[in-house]
Length: 87
Image 1 (spheres, rainbow, N blue to C red):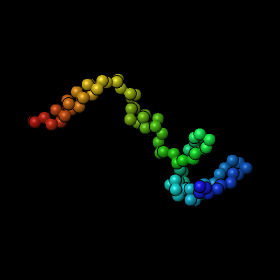
Image 2: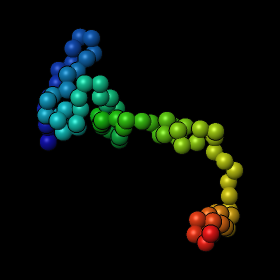
Image 3: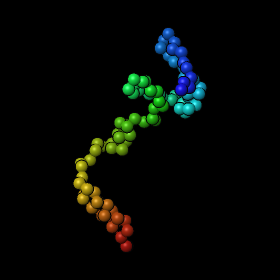
């Protein structure tokens, strides 16, 4: 089902129809992504931050050393013991 149509300018620009902007929640400064899926080009609203930016914020000093499941469980037990220790 076609929602709307746009016309390509001689400079390669396209206006996004108002109905599409409303459906995608686009406003001034919004970023859209163009993706290829099978035989179609898909246009979608981009997330506010890329996964690389989120990863850099979560792990500013890089990823730590991997831990075993037992080490993780022991760390949780130690935290709970400290947190709920009677003073």
